[in-house]
Structures are given as structure tokens and as C-alpha cells.
Amino acid sequence: MFQSKIAGLGYYVPKNVYTNNDLTRFMETSDEWIQERTGIKERRYADRIGETTTSMAVEASKIAIERANTTAEEIDFVIFATLSPDYYFPGCGVLLQREMGMKEIGALDVRNQCSGFVYALSIADQFIKTGMYKNILVVGSEKHSFALDFSTRGRAVSVIFGDGAGAVVLQPTTEEGKGILSTHLHSDGADAEKLAMYFPGASAGYYLEEMPKWPDVELGEMLMTKEMLEDGSAFPYMDGQAVFKKAVVKFPEVIGEALAKNNLKSTDIDMLIPHQANLRISQFVQKTLGLGDDQVFNNIQKYGNTTAASVPIALCEAWEQGKIKDGDLVCLAAFGAGFTWGSALIRW
Ligand code: ACO
Image 1 (cartoon, rainbow, N blue to C red):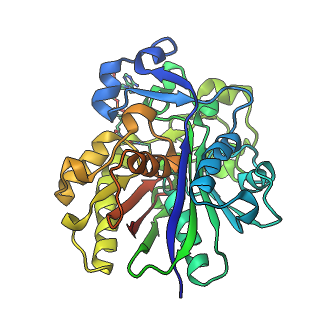
Image 2 (cartoon, rainbow, N blue to C red):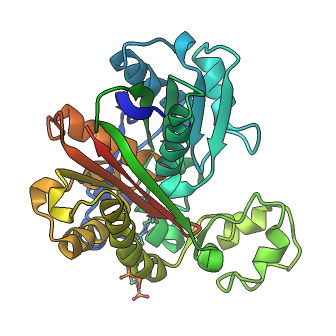
């Protein structure tokens, strides 16, 4: 049985910075409201044309591959986590395989939203452990800005999200006690409609029943129409308070599960990288676990919530800033739509 380690990591964020004040050009909001509720000061948006979920992933992957001292031709499997794929199908994994000039390797898309990267990492870890693959590229990338409602009606959702990509290369290690110690994955579909984008979806007619905010949309209407753009039902929906309440319970629970599995306690964590959902959620989790400011990394202030990209972007930035050192105990944790949640404990 092999143990897997992160051999290289990289991230990419688009050049276009949108501050909270910039958003006041499109909607009624304020820097004060956004910072107080979410901690976000600014976020990045990809170019409308020419910059895609896959193209951002390419940039992050190039850095991760180079830092892992390998090449795109040597990657033997790719896992791509995203909720904003370039196409409804095929997935972004194959687009990345094509754009990077990889061999005819397996490519898998993971659709687990904010916890997508942790799920993808866990899958990659299993493939390394069994010896099936030796050089896996794991990516999280999102272009949210193409599908947000930037009018006042959509402000509670749209101010939160940003675009970007992060990537890691996973390889086997023979160093005793190093690498990914364990991963833990969970879901509960009971609240699936509380954080969702219903269109395009083959079961859209069914889910319309659950959409109290848009009573005028006919049940059974399957295709996205101009009217749906106008009434808001084409855009992501979030019951913010339900998300908050569940996240502040499930984050500490799944981190605790990882620690217990490895006979460790929260004070042993050198760096917690929580999914950058909302600074208030991260602070709540930090307090619950009794962690100091130097044990938790947050960068939502600069990038907003980049969903599947948030954990690898934050992990890479923390590492680049020297906040993760050899031998450190690093914990990744995520919670998001589904609801799905997970954690990974890594000895760096
Ligand atoms: N700017 C100004 N006012 C706003 C904005 C905005 N961007 N958005 C909503 N408001 C207004 C509302 O219209 C409402 O006004 P009203 O009282 O006149 O009706 C008021 O602010 C309060 O609205 P609520 O929706 O009740 O606001 P709440 O205090 O719950 O904050 C928020 C909303 C920030 C989304 C909060 O529920 C929250 O933090 N939820 C957690 C959700 C989250 O973090 N999601 C991250 C994405 S999912 C994930 O990654 C797991």
C-alpha cells in the first residue's frame, strides 16, 4: 500500500479585480454590508470571452506540474472538480487533457461544488494507494461570473462568488508518516434545493415545485427561457441562513472525525485550510475548535468564494507565503451544496 503526497501545487486567478464598491455600479449594495456579512473586500472575474473554467485550470496546472518536477505527458490521471463546467457535457477533465497535451489518460469530472476538491483529492488518494496511478493531476476551477444575477434581486448570492483555479499533483511517497493521512466524505441530500442552480437540468420540472421564490414559473417547463432570466429562476439560489447553520456544525464535525481517526487533537493542527465560503463561517469554526489566528488560513477577502477552487487556491497561497512547512499537520475542510462536506488530513 502506497501513501500519497502533494508533490506540486499552483493557482491562477484572473486579472480583473472587482471591489465591493465596483459592484455598487450594478446593484444596491455597499462595501460595509458585504464585509460585515462575508469578510469579502474584492473578487476576480474572468474575461467574459476567451477565459474559461478550463483555461484557468490550465494555468494553475502548469505551475503545479512544474513544481512537482514532472510534465503534462507524465500525468497518468486527471480529476477535475467544478460546478461551472465549460459545457453541460463533456466535462472539463477531457478539455484539460486536450489543452495540456496529455496522453490518452483517464479524465474524471467531480460535481461536488464547494467540497469538490476535497472529494477529488480523496479519489486521487485511493488510486495512488492501490498503485493504479503514480502522477495524478487534481484541479478545482470555477467561472461563476458568467451565471450570476448582478441585479439587486440577486445580490445576496452574487456578491459572494469569484472566479479562479487551483491544482495539485499527487504522487506516491515512501517517507514514513508523510502525505495524506486520511480523507472523510459525507453528504445529506435532504436540503439539496437550499443551495442550487436548477437550470440546465433534465429534472428541472420536478424541482420547480420546490422554488417558492418563483411561483409564476409553470411546473414542467423544462427549458431555460428569456422569462426565467427576467424572473431570476435561471440563476443560483441560496438559502443563506440554512447554509450558515449547517456549515458551522458540519465543518467542526468532519475535522474532528479526521483528528480522531489519527489520534490527534485540534491543537495539533499547524494549518487549517477551510473552504472559503464566508469569513464568518471560518471564524466560527476556528472558535469552535479553539484554534489561533496563525492556525487558520483565509483569503476570501481577496478572491471571494471560488467554490471548488477555494481550497487549492488557499492551500497554494499559504504554502507560497511559507505558512506551511515540512512536517506540518495540514487540514483541508469543505462544506457546500448538496449538502456535501469533507476533510483531508495531511502531514506535509
Ligand atoms: N447588499 C446589501 N443588502 C443585501 C445584500 C447585499 N449584497 N444581500 C441581501 N441584502 C439585504 C436583503 O435584501 C435583506 O434586506 P431586508 O431586510 O430589507 O429584506 C437584508 O439584507 C438581510 O438579508 P438576509 O438574506 O436575511 O441576510 P443575512 O443576514 O442572512 O445575510 C448572507 C445573508 C450573507 C448570505 C448570510 O445568510 C450568510 O452568511 N449565509 C451563509 C451563506 C454562505 O456563506 N454561502 C457561501 C456560499 S455556499 C458555500 O460555499 C458553502
